[in-house]
Length: 156
Image (cartoon, rainbow, N blue to C red; front, side):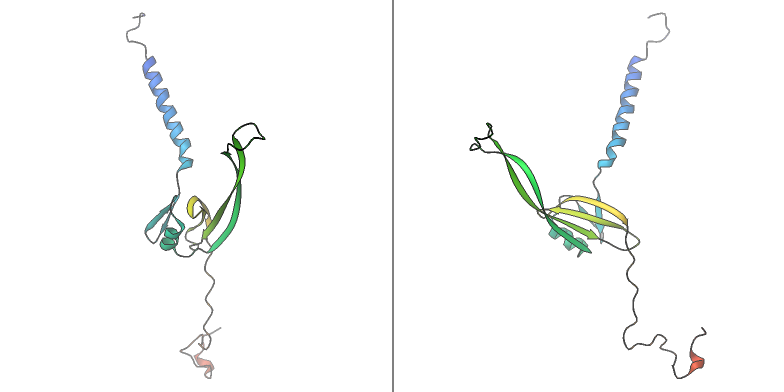
């Protein structure tokens, strides 16, 4: 036994290193966790259709719609000019980015839909406060006080 009272601890060291590597990989992978949006107690997540998101969360604050142009290689046996059966084609995808601003107490969410399916979620900063309410036309600011009686107005 090599003159040692105990067997070598090589197996333990290898297991410890493997365990440390697994922990490090797990910590590095947490950046890929999918976001989810909670609306009225229900969860919206990647893969949901736009109709479901609108039913759960209501109308978005802002919608931006644009066409994405993606070049792809597709099999095409009639592509003789490049000497292989794959040709570059162009795909046009309708992409929508919906913005949900729930106010200053929650984060702003940017939801990206491609072909009507939720493919990406991103958060921004905290939302904007709602605009201040204006007094309604015809209503007095101090309804319990008569403008004819200056003593009834609150002190300035």
